[in-house]
Image 1 (tube, rainbow, N blue to C red):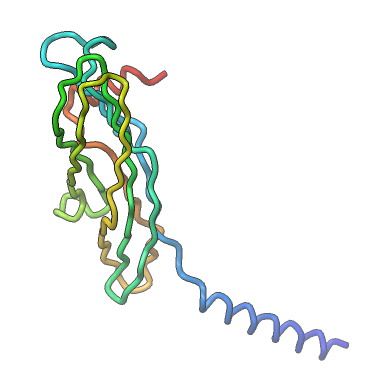
Image 2: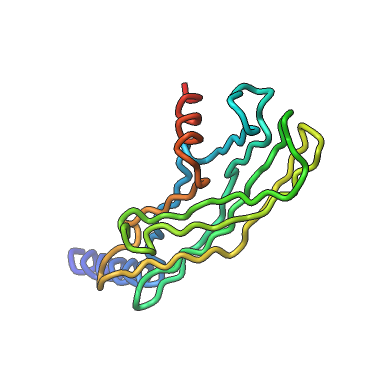
Length: 172
């Protein structure tokens, strides 16, 4: 009985090790920081209440995957943004900037990359547009046996200091 138990345990161990060899290692965590997930653009001038809002943009979703190589991991993402016009909207095409950052790589250029998308703002307050940015690729070099899951990837809207302070003041 002991011999068959040892044989069964050995077979289970071999089977489990075969399963783990086929499993992909964990990807880096992708996070949308709440303080940079939303942008409120006010019309020019001193007013900063609801009547002065030209538009609001927001990171609303992302999908992604990672692809491993001998040199590291490539994080591939699709990001969804929502843009809503406010009472002070001026119709036209607006450039909205966002970033993808890997703090562990900062201050190297790969530590933070800035991208833009264009939104067509209609003259009608309350209009909402959803935009998808496809196939963003961020490469993270890895040392031998270094886990990709030890890296964090942050996504957010590129804000001015004033916009960042506004967001912080709106948090409960």
